[in-house]
Amino acid sequence: MCYSAEVWADYHKYVRAYGADIDIDAFVELYLRRAGDPKIKIPKGMDQRFLHPETRGAIEIRALIQSYNATFVQNSEQELFKQAKRLADAERVLAGSKSTKKAANDQRIAGNKVKQLKRWITDGIRTMPVPERDDRIFPDWYAPVLIVEDGRPIVRPMRYHCRPAGMDPGIDRTKRGQVSGTYNARRDNLTRFWRHQFGHTHGLMVARVFYENVDDGAGGSQELQFIPSTAENLLIACLVSHWTDPAGLLPDLWSYAAVTDDPEPEVAAAGHDRTIVNLKPENVDAWLTPEGRSVEELLALMDDKQHPYYEHRKAA
Image (cartoon, rainbow, N blue to C red):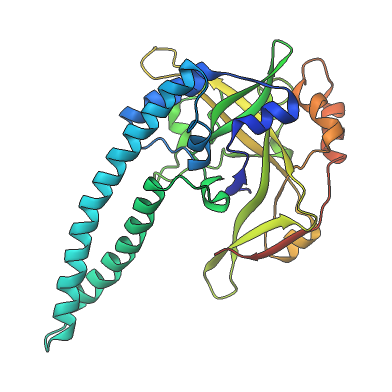
């Protein structure tokens, strides 16, 4: 699986590389939705593209970003004050003669939250890019995706966690409320579960690095970072869906899943059983225009994928 990646969060890279148009209305709509729903996650690298707007839509987005960041920082500062007090109270108890299990637990939790909140506040304020943090996405985060629509390449923001058209929104979560696995599309399931997307609605996500959780050999897990040894971009084959609510009560959702295949040998040796499908540059156009192509032809594009050596290391 590909549970996280450092992607091209700046849509303009797709514009330069593929001559794509930008669906600015879709970007405006997404930022408007985030203003009312803080659960919507957008990488800071995508925000930074709008720091110097040149169009009316981009100007509107910049204002929405500034308002969102101001509120986010203010709320984080208020929570930081609460957690700092909780940490100080816990440390005072632990320094006395009657330390308690609750105080030790409060110290651990509050200490971690203080570190996290300080990092969030710094990120909310800064304008200088830090690509390894700003461009990273996880399931349910939004990122620019390249598609071909009416014969034209277009960049549109989509959620990295596909909800196939026609399915109930409940498919987004497992019975325990966790994110379901539909942010990845297994190659061996493309003609079954994904049959309405495979061969019909394809996309491309460009990334530099991907991350996986693997067994650490001690009963736990560790996060590994995988990056091509030659540092070339990963051209990740994706399936795309435009979900609409039959009742008209929920907003439309553009979402996508990364296609995964059997692991490259070095990825398997590191402890993971899947690897994203990394298309060759010369096969991107064919992948993005699947209509009329046979299943065999599309599978052949994946057989003809790039095979860089994926170096790995423990993620910071």
